[in-house]
Each structure stands twice: as structure tokens, then as C-alpha cells.
Image 1 (tube, one colour):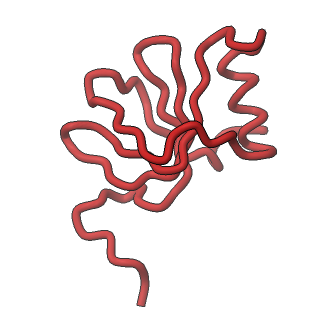
Image 2: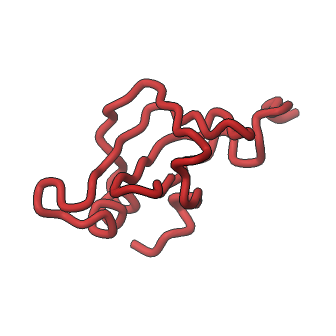
Length: 92
């Protein structure tokens, strides 16, 4: 028996990267994805250039070491989402 994912989407429970149409990326555990957007749990985020790092550098760090949690729960609106990718699918 596995975890019940009824209506939660195929990425439920996986750590994902949400690239937005702006300059922000989020990394967190996917709770739910639907037509309204995506809900991430225990998520971090990074804005391009923050602390002198690009989003790509931030994601490389996240692949190796994880992320600093900034949000218990964050909802990203569908209109703001450019892409959703499993963190593990990225190259370190």
C-alpha cells in the first residue's frame, strides 16, 4: 500500500522547482497541483541576483545541499508558473 494521492497530482510528495514568469524560483515539496496553481510545503525561494547569485547557482546549491525553508506553505498561481521540474532531474 502506498500513499493516497487522490486529486493531488503526479508530483505530490516530490521536491520540485517552480520557475516563475518573473525572476523568482521556488523549491519545495509538492503538496498539490491543479488548474489554479501549485502548493509547496517547506519551501525556499530565490530571486535572480539575490546575494550575488543567479537562480541557476541557487538551484545547483539546492540539488547538493537542500534549501533553507522560508515558507511552511506557499501557493504559486498558475499564471505565474513558467515550469515545474523535479529537483532530482536537475544536474548538480
